[in-house]
Length: 386
Image (cartoon, rainbow, N blue to C red; front, side, top):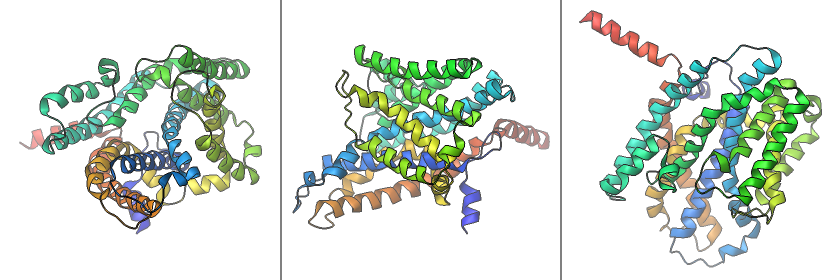
């Protein structure tokens, strides 16, 4: 049964090489950002008076406050995945990546499901009278061309989480040109990338970004590039493969999400802002090289759900806001934490169930890089039959 579901839902890769641990990393990022949004929505909307004080759960609340750092985790994965084939080419002399194929693949893989899902969410918002057509339609158009942040200097109305996809697209466009740095010597390119990470963080706090863009997030993509460089070169593989490094990975993960780091520009806690991308890089490099940690992130359903991250990420906030208005009223017990766990369970199940259908019938068909050719061939065959 699981084998059947695994084959049915597993991500289709363009080069035929499947790294389950990568989808496991996506699963972690996706879970954290979803829990962050459920927690935030419940805290804002619930009218329940609890017998205990939610503020008493100090470490849990501190972790949840830092759970929005899961977005940089996503950016780092993108930085790594996109850089990997270029690193193989520039560093190891592997197959050259044709820019035409690179950009066509991005368009045919991402645009159709994005357009379809965003349009469905738009229609649902109109049908439920969340917004008027007049108010929402300009936002939809701006989102469909990945320019909402640029045009309105505000997060998209159709679904607020789409701002990150606009940042990703900006990275996809400039990434192949950034990857040329990999032609340089190992020491030079690594110093330049590390210096750029620190330099951009300092710049962001001296000259804060006026809207959400690649400028305010580039350090997380750069650390993905650095991981790809290290991974292709096999740097310290045996060291990171040691069993005790699994415990180091747990410690790094907890510190990433518990360390104090605000969103305001300025030099308060600047050391943590600089540290974050490097901690992400260390954490991911442990996953990629440590058999114990890799087995956890490759375990059965983990990479399968992680492989659906694009659809789940696009839909999760809409599902939370549409169902949460009802679930937030349900009083499971008199105490805060069991009620929150109830919200997590119900809404996560709903998100997974709905997203699975969207993924299977809307996103996954476009993962096949030959879908355009197959579609045109089918139309040609039908034309001849007529």
